[in-house]
Length: 260
Image 1 (tube, rainbow, N blue to C red):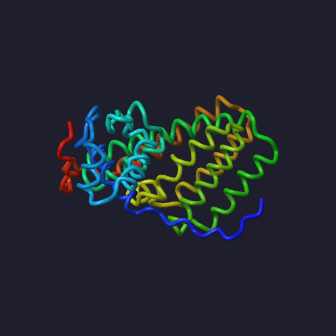
Image 2 (cartoon, helix red, strand yellow):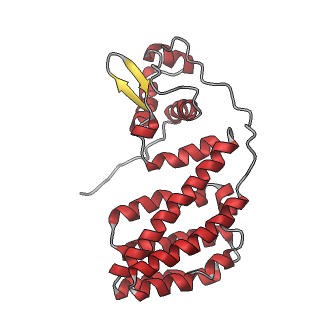
Image 3 (spheres, helix red, strand yellow):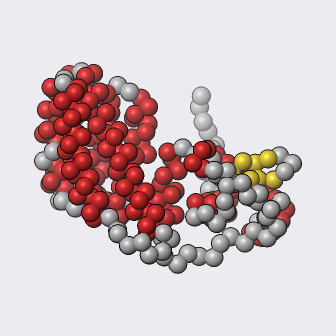
């Protein structure tokens, strides 16, 4: 279908700001699960916006599993542990980074653990299922990393390309989609990036083993050796994460007068 005379859609920054402020309060525990937000008219007045803009912001929160909009009854904060998906992790990292270093570090550890679990099974599946073309794609992605060992960000982006090639060799679409959230986190969070890629040449040295394990078609061996290699790498990474438990000063909570 031809598309003509289409103008750019302008981002609703006011709605995004409302969503960001309420999301921060929810993720930091200032607004607890079960709390009922004030009526729309009152909440819009507190933010200094109209009700349509407020509804756009609330819709963003609802789509992320942070609130439930109850028609005729207002909006209630939900338990995001029960309603949200893996795509909430970047928001959690962003929020905790500036407000609670202890929880940030623990979540970063959890991310590494999930990344390791997924990577181990993905390599095992790739060993069992890959085609000749799949193995060539992994090898090509690794070869491109040769010129990136002196550029941490470029190497990290290339590492994601390697991971994607392995996921495709595993022939499991949900793994590829899960990878989109997990593997890109270091690129979006400087603390993780510095901890995971202090010396890219060290990670680069493991690529040969990765290719050899996939080519072996030995699923059990691939699982066993990848787990050992990644556990060793993650142990070193964890040592580089912030260790302080001191809480940073948080901005004032969103004023929600009239909440019930």
